[in-house]
Length: 475
Image (cartoon, rainbow, N blue to C red; front, side, top):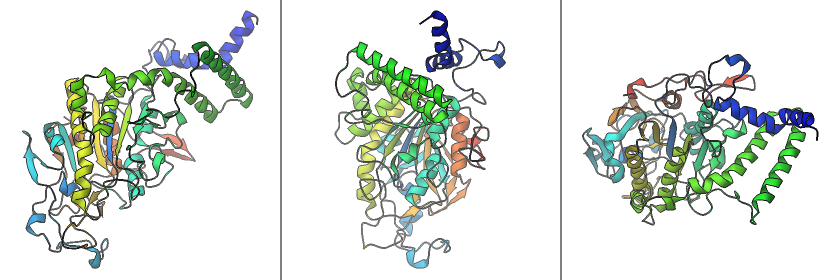
């Protein structure tokens, strides 16, 4: 091949395009319309961010707020009685059971005096780090729609997850690792599975990549048989050449280019992932902090510790799931025996989550890392169907429940909003999913009204057509 032909093929082929993209991203060269102004790595935030990354812990099935973070003494006082004021347009009289007191004792915690039950004793010790929203609401009382809404802002499949929006809005901080990583529960996937972390109509590179706390961290990442480095490199060069010619023949196309980018990412991950998730590099005291020395806490503890290692290496968004598919494996869906449901579920995650908070704080990472602890909805102060004299559970409640956040310039030991005296509905400063998502994006430097993507004739956004930033949460 003559030199002129080589330069022409390189400049117009996939390799040249990829190199140009990397140089533009790193600021080594500038776009024609950028004048002499240096480019930042990835898209620019709309305003100075308080957070650079997110770790989200999602409790699938519906955590009971009146048994965890929202103390309602009247439930003890009026146990066994009917709640005097219920919206009968929502509940018919025969579906309103008797009030049930909390199954776990509440106590004031830390200097901030936050009321937290004994369900989460280790998280309770970190009360002064936490920022509570005790007036969360959602518009569906069914698991799949509510879970979709909590993660994508919409009650149906086909919309990008919050992690995908963040990847799209801020770009990658490490070309060798995914921007959005998901750890499903080791016991099973949540309702509707991987659609909860889909990039939907956003480019495929922004989809959540599944990691696993047990066994092979990334399934099918490595070749089934060992390959010599020279053989692997030759195969990749051949594949790149074929893809480049195919891309030129097709005249481009985002879907095909995104697929090529995914394959290239997988190739880079073969080298980057083993080091990033090698927990043997951590001290034994760190293992104990996350509960890796205990059988019950080890699976979720491994997820939490790997999450910390990943965000240290530039991963933008890590999502950890607690609870799997409703009715098929263990989840937080406690319709009947709440005590025997919530207690073991909490034991699995309480120590690891507390350990994550402590570890992030002592490493200085909590200052610009946002930790989100949420669920699709809460649970009622009564059971809709009475199931005997003891062991009552609680049914779904989308009218008011609790979530918390930590780090990233938030007021620590602070509580926002309230439910009524029974814990039935948010009555002071109700918060909707668009409010919640808009606030999270704001902390990351993103104006939720400006982060849009044109799809099917509509400028789509995570918060749809509503949402207000809750500035009262900010320090």
